[in-house]
Length: 256
Length: 333
Image 1 (cartoon, chains in turn yellow, cyan):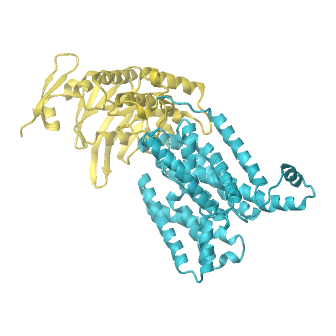
Image 2 (image 1 turned 90 degrees about the vertical axis):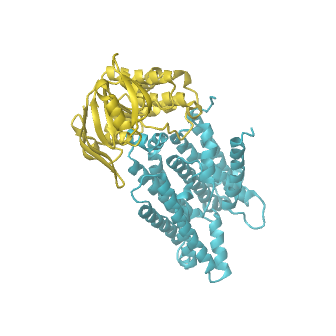
């Protein structure tokens, strides 16, 4: 269980996240949605103690701020935004970096680590790319390889920041289904998302963030209402909520 | 595109063999060439007095210094390139080698170097440590590589300015000449005393830099991802700074400024590995040892009227390496 109590983040003089209270349970896929600059990524980074935060953030009772980095790394895998990759590693080597939190000092990758790397590559469907150089892949291939790197950690938690960016619709569905499967297998999965219909279709719960605060927190049906979308995103949208999940069709900017 | 790289231990064994060949050649050849038989006789306590003096007083300390200084420069270059994620980084980017040079120049300028042969290297190491304190003060608690580079430029520029001032103000042309000669970098006339001063610095520096191996790999994915994989960025940076300052400071203290080894060796090694920063560290150390030993051998066997300085040779070596990279970048082959 990941619990946030009165969490705030100050970056410079700006309050980016304020008064956030939320709890995330294992076995659920939560989508964090909201406009650009709402504080979604900062909130995700605060959960991993990557930015100093006020209030309290804890996993199974242990405060993340006081936890040794290695411990936290084994409990939550993190897929950052932006596909950063500084050296031209092969795909296999890159996915293998996901095992770093598990390696004892001076030890080498074990057979168990190798098996975890294979599982991650299989699930993200990148085994065919294993000897390719990751910096030479297409944006979509690279996104899947980096996702495999996060899966290779095999942590009970996963926080993914915009994992669908630069993916075509087919691969967006693949990644969402992977996260769904992770959650169904008992993992705690949190994803920062922009595609509301995708979020509605796969997430158990959505957190709608605006200006650093939680505006709505609930099932996709509860959160994705035309009124809330108008206030938060400033858009006119039709929400069809007849099916299993609501679908959002946007028309244009809301008139003031 | 896929690529082939030799298995890691094959690469290390090949580089070690090359280093051994370079070291033996460095013992054999010079102003007076020794035959293998004379070398063995001298090494095993035979009564060839000339060979014994050449071996133990001249060539052995010089060879050992070339090995450890080269290893340190190669390793520091690889460690810095990995940490800064910039293939153009080299040991002098933090300004510590310039600061060490300033310490040495100060020792010459104020005549302290004449008091005892150990004074110059000791002051040089002092200069490196002082620059480290300055680096910490300037870059503060920030973890970004950019602040570190900017602080390094500030420290390095200050040290270069101080060195220029010493040259400018030197009381006579001989003092200026002595400073210039030292700055060009050389391993000539070094004794075991120099080796024993440099060795502990280099051992400590290397250990700290090698300790960073995994953190450097994690940094391939950026700072956030590295931290989320359990890397303590502050400790990583501390090891990098202290390791580079002490190790490179110790190396510059006995050899003078020798550029480009730290820059080109990782470039030569990288294509032979899986390109991860950790895979380059140890091979760059061995490769640096081999390259500097060979360069120092070149200094001795290339016939010139004035002795060729080691720093000059390594600078010339740097040019073709970068031309090759430039051509690859422009896809000329």
